[in-house]
Image (cartoon, rainbow, N blue to C red; front, side):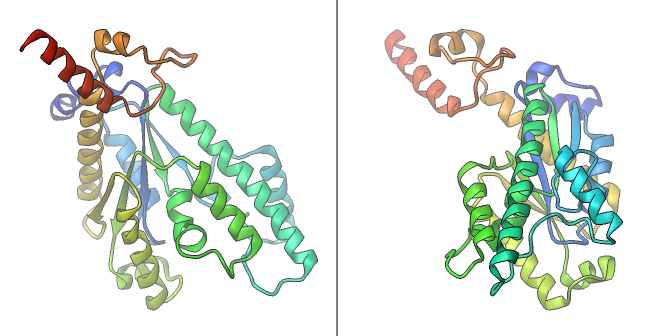
Length: 282
């Protein structure tokens, strides 16, 4: 039974169908409905899955480093907000720059911790649904374009995200016009929301698997659309997995859980299959 069959029948597919797990990021501007849709998708998805918040608002996160929890507690007592990232402002004093770097280093550790948790979920064979994604959210401000003129903490953040941060296997943008986003959240302005929306749309040229869906439809319709795309993606991933005999011939190394280490395996399988066909004359 494939994941696609399981989705149509309402049954859970065998765990081997998603060996290694996948990550799916729901992205979009504030007001797109990411958290609401993520929770609904979790209820409907016929696959083992978990939702992991990957945003900066720690009030919305159930997991964080002890150091982050301590800093958040201090900020609450002082009446500060729960956004832990440093403000990238030009013309800061040396002391303000040093403080911004310290905050950024702590935030980089937080991002790495959540990536560690996501990796553990994937290795357990689960679909990890990201409510937001750090790479997607910060791509326009810290990665895209020239880094000259950006504050040092923003340049550091962009360097780490670009070089070492794992991209989601599948990113789904919940799209909506700026007027709808403004009505839902009441934050920013139409010009800013239009610019932010375009920044997310531009990720289509950056990520290997990126889909845009209409987020203005009723919640159940949007959730079903996301579920269908996840199931189709997982089905394609499962189809690309080699048979045990082919995997043995390729001598793919395994991690401590017995799962094959991720890599460009489908290409190698295709080449091996062609060689076998030539040798057997089939």
